[in-house]
Image (cartoon, rainbow, N blue to C red; front, side, top):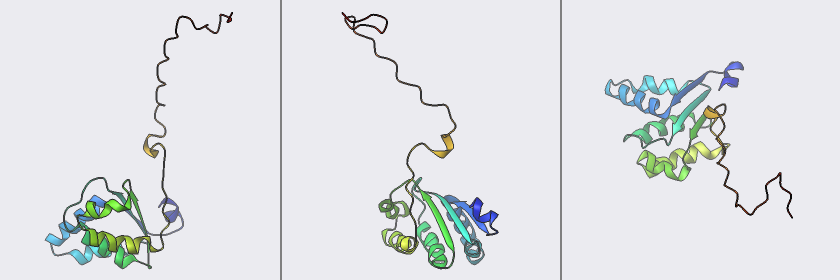
Length: 146
């Protein structure tokens, strides 16, 4: 996202919870087209935290609308800590999750990130395990074996 901004592209970053909240709020106020346009306009849309917890009903419909309309016209990036197979359960709508993934993954590059979280990369290292006590009949480094 940062590099896209540096190159002059319009970028919108939102958590999946913010996306759903925006649609639910504007749906109540009958302003869904205004919110949809907000998500369709950017050159790059980054949706973060997919899979942290189950989403409210209709979330899949909102996400599908965004992905379907951006499909093959704009770039979309999503982060998730859950396998794609779980998305139907997370959205409580397996057919909609399938339709989202069909479009989303068509031209996608998927990256599996392993290792420590970026957010804790600079934290203190994990303490080593305590040393086990030596058996009394084992020689120490200072005592040569006989």
